[in-house]
Image 1: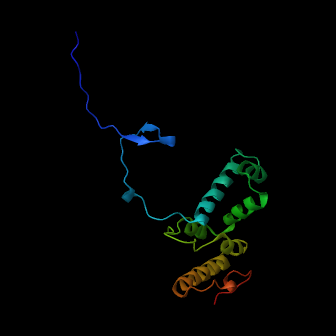
Image 2: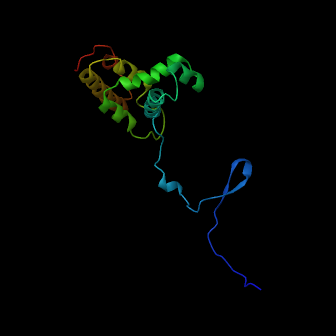
Image 3: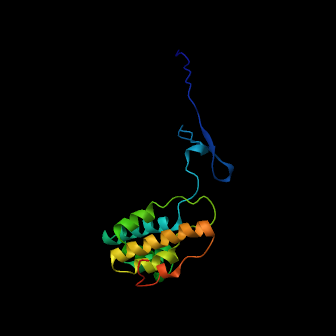
Length: 158
C-alpha cells in the first residue's frame, strides 16, 4: 500500500465572469502597484496608428479601407488616426508618453493634433507643439481657452 502524500501550496481563486470561480496564477497584484489614472486617448490612438501601419506594411491587412471595415469605423476616422504618423518622430514619442490623466478631460485632444500633423515642416510642427503645450499649461492655471493661433496652418512661433 502506498503512503498518503500531503501537498501544501497557495491557491488563488478569482471571481470570473458571471461570478464563476477561476484559478489564478499565484501572483497577487494589489491595486497599489498600478499607476493611478488612465492613458490619454491620443496616446492610445498614436499606438494604434503605429500598429495599423505595421499591419498594412506586412500585408496582414490589405488597405486602410479594410482596416476601417474590420474596426467598424469610417475611412475618414482611419485617416484621422493615421495622420498622427505625419508628426515628427520626437513628437510621436512625446504623444505616446503623455502623462496619465487622473480626472476630467484629456488635456491634449485629437482636434489639437490634427492641424499640427498636417504641417509638413517638422520644425514648424515642433514650434506649434511647444505653443500648444504652453497654452495647455496656461489653461490649467487660468482655466482659459486654447489659443487658436497655435493650431492655425502656418502659425508662427510667438
